[in-house]
Image (cartoon, rainbow, N blue to C red; front, top):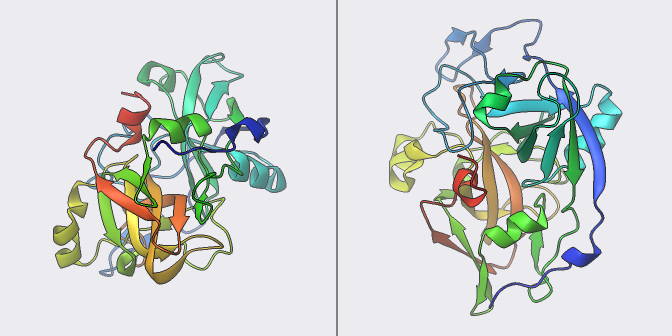
Length: 288
């Protein structure tokens, strides 16, 4: 059975930000989990050669954000921009050489508080730091009519429908590219909500990486996190299942790794992940 939602009662709100500058602290060094000091790019600006569908690992980078990183200049305004923007929302460039070009929101990155937006390659070449971007924000408050204990977050209702989930045996069957154990989830734990930001898959355990095939994880992959509940923040809970999307790349910093923004959660095991190698934003939204 196809899931029914309340999409006809959701608000659609115009929110906006701009292309963010490349981000570094006053001390530009990162210290890796094995004690090395490194300086590499990753967060902010326009990444001209990294988009959803590309590998999350292997770049000479840290927390690489695919395509465009955007934020509002004012921190309070940025809260609304990050909170209301949802995966699959349409984004339109409203200033600069690429004015009028359209893209798609692909995720959110906590800490730095960026919204990631994918644009075609020829648009990326024309974008500049400070160019303004308007997002047609809709999706927060999306709910299932037939499975009320499965909570939904951060998804445009059109994107949710394109996921091709189905209800069978009293559970929501969700296509996912990878299954991840909650034991390796790190930075981002402890927030009181999942409407902004993400949390990271730690890649420092070779046996877990091999067992779950995590070396092949891609930016934009839909993943299932087993024994994790995201209803009111991210917690470890046996029997729970949460679904998210990989929004940024790997990191060598302790506790960090590819980041996952929350999309769905069930504390009572009402989500059934189904492995599908095409469960990636690039395929689902035909971005590449």
